[in-house]
Image (cartoon, rainbow, N blue to C red; front, side):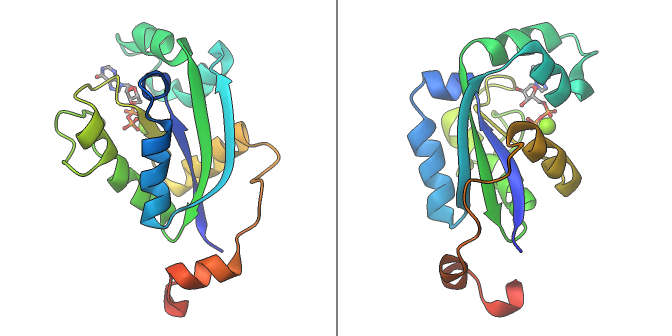
Length: 154
Ligand code: IDP
Ligand code: MG
């Protein structure tokens, strides 16, 4: 079984027309997109997803930003997918995110940083269940997995 993680393409990325470019980078990396959903964040979803930031002074602006438009959620699978995604998106502050990362290439903001990815395997399980209560749309395809990894990595 591959590891799975939740990716959110945030409203700033959607409005800037980056859904395709961001998704293409994940696909090109060999990550498997096994579910896609779009929605507008509600207050309830915000409180759940950003509970760890509720007391921060920037929370009201973060909430407004996340509710301002459409978000695209992806169910993404791969070996060590949580770590791979965190390294692929780059630092929270996009100004210090390494070039080559999604934030490092497309953003220069700490808040308008385009993309979310779960920060631990435990968080990934909770967040995937929140946004994909019915699970992924398709199972892992063993033929594709065999092209992407050697047997001793699985
Ligand atoms: P992460 O998205 O890299 O996991 P978190 O600390 O979980 O970072 O913060 C969640 C989101 O809250 C960030 O992606 C960003 O949009 C926003 N945020 C985090 N820290 C700040 C800040 O200092 N100022 C403004 N917005 C912030
Ligand atoms: Mg986070």
